[in-house]
Amino acid sequence: MNDLMAMPALSAADLAAVSTDDLKTQLANAIGVTAHTVARLAVIWAELERRGEDLSALRRGGLFSYLPYIAHGQLDPEVVVRCAGQAMLIRAMMDIPLTDQRRVLREGLPVAVDDGGAIEERHLPVEDVTARDVRRAFVGARLRSPAEQIRLLPGAGKRANPTLRGTIVKIRLTAEEYEELRRLAKSTGQNTPTLARDILLRGIRS
Image (cartoon, rainbow, N blue to C red; front, side, top):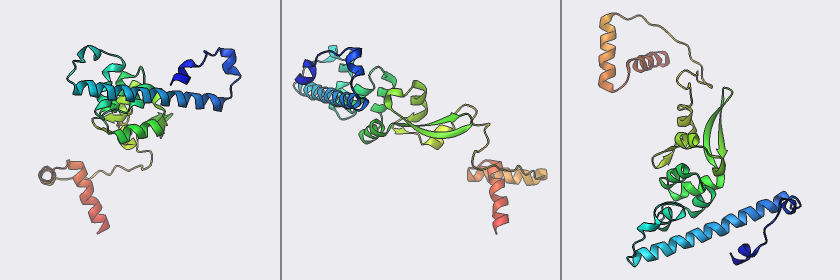
């Protein structure tokens, strides 16, 4: 940490002479050092709490507001470092297990996107995650699957299934037959069209 702090400031001209791989390595190392520092601060916070110190004045915002969650194992310190300025994302990450937090940090946040009508899954680096991505990907203490996210995309209810196109079949029933079908659907907890489809498919496959 002392070595990092002692490094002279680099100008744009200095950085232009450094290779891309070296810049990525320096950035990763700096993030690692910073995350380690945040983790150490969280340990100090936990010790002060154990001693009964009143730390309420430090909870009003910024880094210190996250230290209790890090200290109690609810938040990975690297989340605070890499998601700085993304309060909505950090709050969402707090709610999922640490193993999931670390997978998102490592692999990116899985999101379903509509790319000109073609639905695909992408893994976004946490630095690129938007508030819309957070609302789509997180639900309570878990991450939505890509299939669940697709249903949240604009127009998803009107979009034909991209992998399975169906044909609408119209069947005329008497009022008595329809009422019997409706009562059966209600008693089994299904909706009427789904039950009718299931009955029809059982007849075809039998």
